[in-house]
Amino acid sequence: MAAAFAGCIALALAIPCFAQVSTDQIAVGGVGPGSTISYVTDVYGEPAAAKNIDADTGVQYIEYNYAGTFLVGFNAASRQAAYVTCTENWLATPDGVTTGMTADVLNKVYKQADHLYSYEENGTDKTLYEYEDAYGNRLSFDVQNFYIISINVRTAG
Image (tube, rainbow, N blue to C red):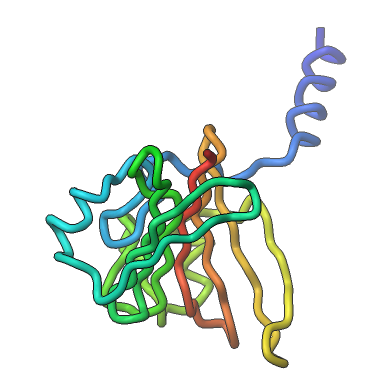
């Protein structure tokens, strides 16, 4: 019995633990999976610019641009948010995280990221912290010089 218990403990310790955020944590400025065009315009008004995008996958999107720092892309067929990007600290996640904060807040609020990616953009090293819910929706944070520079939401569909 003790050996079986020890085996279960060893197995449990060998399984990696991931953050796996809840779906209601995946949003910025109140916009996340399921947000509709009408909801976003009710909250933020008409965008400064809007454009249609034909993705390589054949999916069509309508992208709303609010002052160049808050972008919301809607699936044209469902009219629901498919992606959101925020690069200014005037909007927060439901847990209060904004751009401009130091990256250590991510481990405090969301625990260890499900995925960490290091990349270079325009000669600058950056890190992407990515968290997923049980449905494949993603909340990610681009970090440069230990500061959060953008918050991104991507839906699974």
